[in-house]
Length: 142
Figure (cartoon, rainbow, N blue to C red):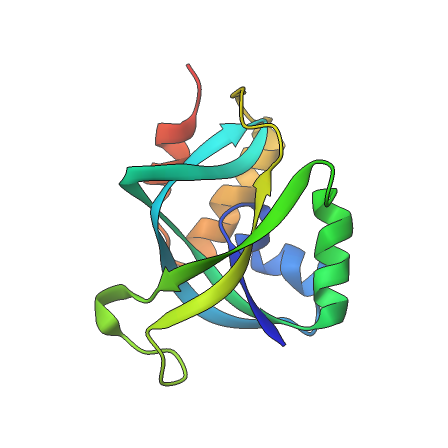
């Protein structure tokens, strides 16, 4: 089992239940020093002035394989380990910080506005997880 930080489509509980039925939802967490952006799909990039709110999952190796296929790993998205934090030192299973896997896009040079259906999927996930949609709104390319 490992931890996985989701900030895009995999915040959507319905989507994750279908894709990774053995994943365990652990709650909201914060990825410090990163910014949420759209490159047609959700992405993150290092930024000392921003934090990204998302969902922490405990996943199985089977879940990771399913996510790798979905994310087009290693061509479209790559993976790295990050440290995510709970809010206000609220603990999850006795912990406040987690080393988690996260996907990020391999091409970080362009930004694009997402499709309405993709954006709506994220809004549904954020709403179900009680995450503000502000980081989504700020990431829209005008």
